Amino acid sequence: MLAAAALHGNGGPPRSRPRLRGEAAAAFRLESGCRPFRPGTGCRHQRSLTVQTAITRLLGIEHPIVQGGMQWVGRAELTAAVSNTGALGVLTALTQPSPEALHDEIRRVRSMTDRPFAVNLTILPTLKPVPYEAYRDVIIDSGVKIVETAGNNPAAHVPALKAAGIKIIHKCTTPRHALKAEQIGVDVVSIDGFECAGHIGEEDIPGLVLIPATVARLRIPVIASGGFGDGRGLVAALALGAEGINMGTRFMCTRESPVHDNIKRAIVNNTEADTCLILRSLRNSSRVARTALAQSVIDMEKAGAGIDRIGPAVAGAKGRRVYEEGDAEAGIWTVGMVQGLIHDIPTCAELVRRIVSEAEVLVNERLSRLVGLSQPSSDR
Image 1 (cartoon, one colour):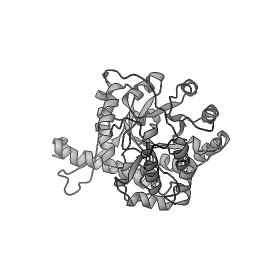
Image 2 (spheres, helix red, strand yellow; image 1 turned 90 degrees about the horizontal axis):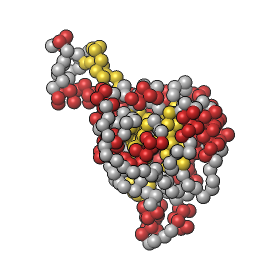
Image 3 (cartoon, rainbow, N blue to C red; image 1 turned 180 degrees about the vertical axis):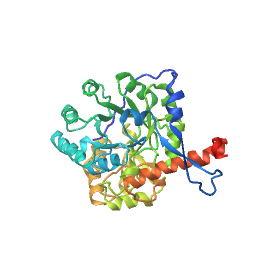
Image 4 (spheres, one colour; image 1 turned 60 degrees about the vertical axis):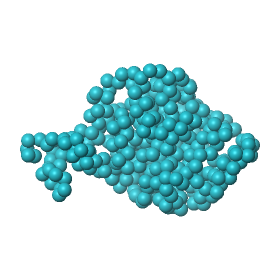
């Protein structure tokens, strides 16, 4: 699958968002209960932290963390493992070869978790027609209640999904596309910054600008995507007005991920500089691992090659071999700049617990000290 057409719509002036005065502004809620004093914190007791946002309430999850929908990676084992942590696991529909296979994979997820999970349906123009309506109907008939759409405008699928009571998260790369998504009726926008893996759009807007610019234009909740992998990112995203984070590369590098250990170790060893952009000449820009094969694609583009020459080099089946066989040069494989912040291969439970703990420390200790957060009278 190659081209990823974005939603089309006109931007508009920023609209007021009363939500920020309530939900997002109170995303981190310092509870009244106390915990034992820890040396160096500057106070006798620590107040416990819960992270409740519009996303956790809307989707019925414990933590505002969403696993990215990833081709060849978003299978039942990873989806269930993420959901079991209290985050939102995402099963990738088109990883399955047929709608019938997707039905079976959804059943496998349910055999491993009773927590909420989503199914990703990425709508792309392809050389071989994909029965999107049949995949969608399987999702509906299976009773899935959260769907992540990506790629083309999902308007043709929104009425059926909404009629089934499904919450729709749409992934896009610019504020104007996010606004159009809101207008056609999606419930949540997942906004992908320039740092992300895979399709980055064509406007190269980094998250630090993209996230608040999108939040300012929408009334529905926004999930921040691209460059997130730890508690610092979660706190930053919430500070920018998002209601949660989406992580693909970080969950790809966990023990439950079906990706070959060679690729996981490559992610750990790589830096933030070890990605590159391909298919820019075709206006289908994608961030991938910096490999000899990826460089050959860039060289072909510089020489003016078209899709007839480039297509075979970037075939999705070759990327699948990378993940399954562990040969980083066997095909093109996507990875985000966040790999520069990834230094281990934890379980999903360890990862989510760490992210929430890091966020807690940042808010309860560093940020509270910086703003001089006063302690309750019982702490004085």
